[in-house]
Length: 422
Image (tube, rainbow, N blue to C red):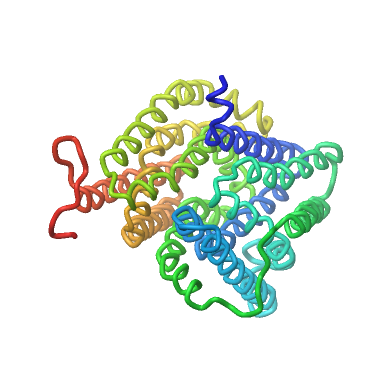
């Protein structure tokens, strides 16, 4: 028990499960309290927000974690963190300006696609989220997982509490509560941060971070497209009501997905260090063990989700969303292969193959977009859209395994780097 309580990875997973649980409950409350159209509009807002946040994350997050976790001393760590702040601040200002101006330049298209909420209000939320994002990224890079959890907790629990107390709130009121909570937490993060942005940019360090993130930004954007393309194309073809129905199984997936994401997040600094030290035997052992354990651990949950999908959807979102239960059944197949896909992406980044990981995810996103377009344009059902997600994930696993085995060959049960790649 003492060993478990001292394990920072366990705390990270438990914390993320709690935070994901708050988000899960928030969606359930909103699904029951808002009209189907308004709930669909909220899902569209959150989906677009996730896409922009992925752009900001891609330019900073992975590079920050990788370089800070391998920094030789505290001075290097502070130098890298300060450069990450500079990149993230400038990028946030540019993105907020582009989004704000776009609502005037493309007003007709924005209204036709139900994007008004996003373009009108997200520039404010974008700036409010900057200190929160940087606080969690720096905490992850320094493996301070309790602090990382605390920031996420403060960002999500008050919002859940307020919408639970005021169940009959209008959509615009919910949006302002969302922004106010994040603004308050952002101020706390700024006061707590020991890193301050200097006026003079560290060009060398910025180039170092961007040199790595030029690949990871495409990876993170493409990863987001893998999830958001379904919602955006369903909205374009069928409207917000069908978006609302499709989103319920997606949110239910997070009950199982969050522990995997949490464990994988904490594995990245450790796998990166093992790869940098050339300890490829331990690298392989950690990789295969975690994928195997997670896959086996998921099996009973997947069985429950498949056989009781209708009851689960009814309990979570109410009778109006029972039509989403067949989609949940399809997604249980996706969850079965998710551990291998997630860890392959981490492994590729850890062995300095971010460009391969980028290519893998871009191919998966392209396949997902084309598949969704084909399904929806031929008036097939939403279960077929979910099957496209399963197909592109299997394709990504094949590509990932091919390239990592090309980089790191297996001989006598150990990884080694072939002479041709040295």
